[in-house]
Figure 1 (cartoon, one colour):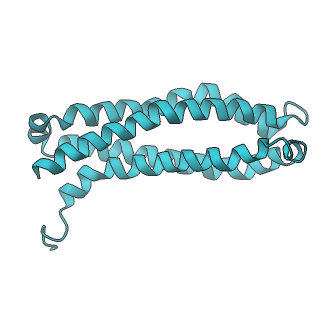
Figure 2: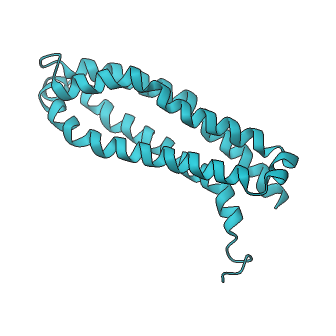
Length: 167
């Protein structure tokens, strides 16, 4: 059995939501960085031809990563809240984990706004103007990333720091 001096699984569990939400935020930033390049003025004409095919390959892997990270964040947060519940209550971290859980789940509230734009890109509904659909998706993606994703991450930072200060 591993020594708690070297590796404490409870400390790892308490940090897991911060780690996974950091990965989610990083992936969101990467998506924005790589996808906004398609909408550069000098690339838009070529991008309109390329985007539907690109998104057919890109989207399944992207959505899998997003859902996996959200699932890991939510499950590790719930587990953290149930392990040593009393200490989370005493150090004030429970409310921060709870807020982080709510904000992480709120990421999915944006699905009705982004799904039609993604579908329009994949199906080329705009008939050669997929960059316009990508513009719409990027606006929602940026709003979601800078609100619920960043706020969830900040909540997990506070929760983790509060926990580590008393550990």
